[in-house]
Every structure is written in structure tokens, then in C-alpha cells.
Length: 66
Image (cartoon, rainbow, N blue to C red):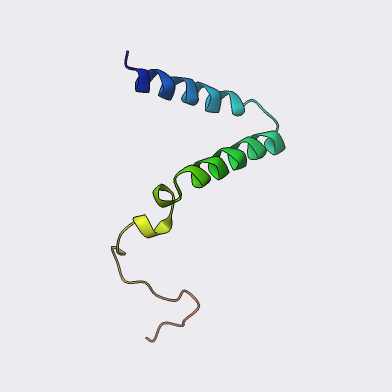
């Protein structure tokens, strides 16, 4: 097993373990994890890396003419 695969399995196992926690504890852990990832690699979790929209963006508040 590669080192990366082993690390991925440990992380997946840890995330599975959070499912057994109370919602507030689970949210705290996930929030801290996301904050840590964003601080390490902001470009990898930025919406700017998603690319152009795949369909036209419309304002959902606008009334459709019909």
C-alpha cells in the first residue's frame, strides 16, 4: 500500500468516526478541518478554480416572462 493510500484510509476512517458524534461536535471537527485545508491551500478550495459556468446563470428572484 502506498503512503498516500494509507494516509487517505486514515483520514476516511477518522471522518467515519465523526458520524458517531453529536452534531455540534461533528460540525466543529468538520469546520476545523475545512479551515485548515483552506489555510494550507486556498487555491484548491476556492470557487475560482471551478472554471466557467456550464450553463447560463440567472437571478432566481427575477420573474420569468411568459
